[in-house]
Length: 450
Image 1: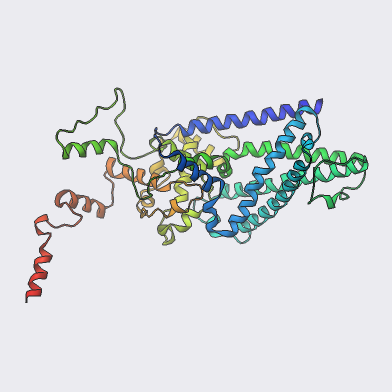
Image 2 (image 1 turned 30 degrees about the vertical axis):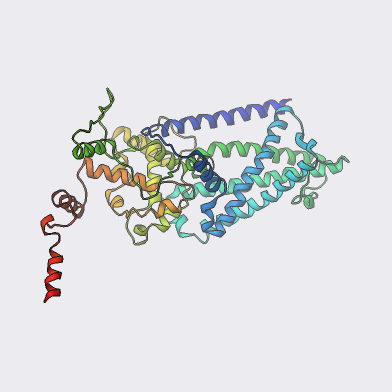
């Protein structure tokens, strides 16, 4: 009874804290502008199944894709056992789903095999980050101490959770043998290790209880750590992929007010719709996170910080400052800075920046985090968008920040300003009068005639 009460208190606190953090993240995302996202629902579901559930984009790099698949499938399947743990902890039962018989045996066997594969995958991932130091995982100004530590914390936590589960299974099997009882389930990984902890009943009970409690408390702690971590993508990737852009990647959005002005210029009978009463004048582009859409802010919470976008960016490859991953991470950092309340496990720089901003001049996403030099390095090739395994649209944020520079501040580079003037005056990017546009043809004709 005492154990059940303790479990219920721990579970309620853990789940309640997680819900509180999710509500805080929802408020942050809703800080962005409204954006209506429509499109073919069946196509969205198909994209969700292929990209989010099927990990389609991950398999462009086979080795990390297979390792990630082990962890991903393990995360999904082991949640079945979590249901059993919640029931057992609440009602004081023991392996309550054992009545499923052969089905239960298959589930337990799959859980153990996947648990072992998760440990192997996490060890390899730790080696890739800390020993071989894969460049896209470690390089870049955005990959400071917190992102590096965050990845290691998650990988080590996953290993500890699996080892705790194995310790519980080993001790539980041995106790059943000593009591002459057939334990429900099949355990292909730990069945050969039943003698690992000896035969002392009291010791085995302590090990089994410790493994069980460490596993469930670890899961609740892991769950509450996720909102502060890049691994929050295991939750956010599904809605983010569902609402991802269905139009061609090269199709840019238009500013509604400018569209109306152009239509009125081309058609004098066109009536510009009046702005909603009391609405603030529309800002061109984005200066800060509230100028971005809720979908762009959701993108930043979905980022896995895997660096695939930056590793294929032609600007970054040629040594320019632009890193699409940094743009997304900067957006998330600024959003957290402006949020109403800190995350439970918020990294130090969030809190330090929040305190600094209170006593100094307010800074914004543009220039405060992202510099114009980074933005103008972008070639708009969409390589970053194509490579992202969770369908983040880095380019949309870059373009909105550039729009603000051009339309609000007239801060485009000199070469672009010259092009804009030529288009306005000559109807073309070149500094030639429209009447001289076909002089080359006359010159060619005369050269041919002679």
